[in-house]
Amino acid sequence: MTDESGTIALVTGAAHGIGLEVCRQLAERGWTVVLTARTLARAREAAKGLAGLAGKVVGFIDNAKPNFNYLVDDLAELLTSQHGVKRVLKRQKRSASVPAPDEVIREFAEQCDLVITGSGD
Image (spheres, rainbow, N blue to C red):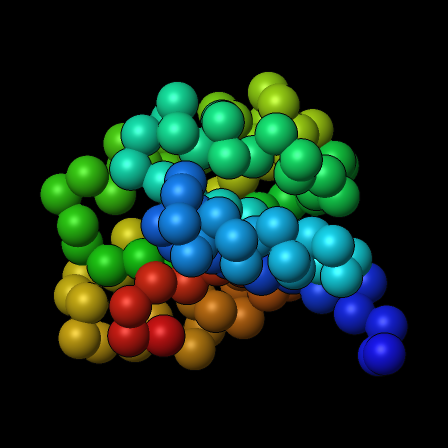
């Protein structure tokens, strides 16, 4: 079996069902799993086994969803308070159909240990 430790996965819809099972199986293989859910309570419940992000800087780039700031702020609070993430950066794109500019991706890649992008990237 290949050593997959150090690999990071973002799993959306991870509070239950297939998403939660994907998180469980990846974590068993040594992956760092970042999960999302519709509510902070569900994310907290599903993330009980999350480890490996302590001291890291995480960056989020996503489209102009009306609830972008709310969702990322909640996830940032969870990651910093429960999992020792040093800092969470966020950048909102103008449109889902247009990828983030290369310079934004490079800037985040230089500043962050993990960059998570949304639709279009």
